[in-house]
Amino acid sequence: MMPGRAAFVLMIVQGVLVAPSFAEQTCDTSRYPLSSPTERFSDNGDGTVTDEVAQLMWMRCSTGQSWSGSTCVGEAAVYDWPGAQELAATTNASGVRFFNDWRVPQLRDLAMIAERQCENPRINLAVFPSTPPSLFWTASLRPGEGFEDHAYALSFGPEGVQHVAKTERHAVRLVRTAP
Image (tube, rainbow, N blue to C red; front, side):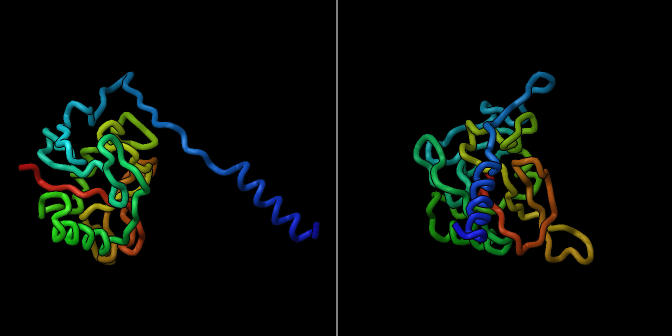
């Protein structure tokens, strides 16, 4: 084998052997109860749930995934911030989810479904299955001069809340005010 090729093969093998693996979700309720318990949500039977406390209806799946009747299948799609806003407009125009007032959530809305007692991901997987532990866009803009091109994103992983450039690509979960 040629020396360059051997080094390339070794790099691939090392990459495979040290590639990160994702652990299963863990929740610790030894000190505090769940912040987003399953009982707080009503299953609407159509791939949506209603948060009875916040009076918000959520799509159970991240955009790009589809509801199978029991779980979310597929991969979460990622969008830049303008693309996330356009996604909501397109969803509303199509009537796909029976309503025409879906929106990208405000930071306070998305934070309400984050499960503070769990990690990897920090969300109730019984209510929002197959949610990746990654950043999700919010409609909340970063205030202040020089931040016009930033918005807030909330991570269901370890990153928490971040203000990020609107050109970055992140996942989206749509919400609407419950009737």
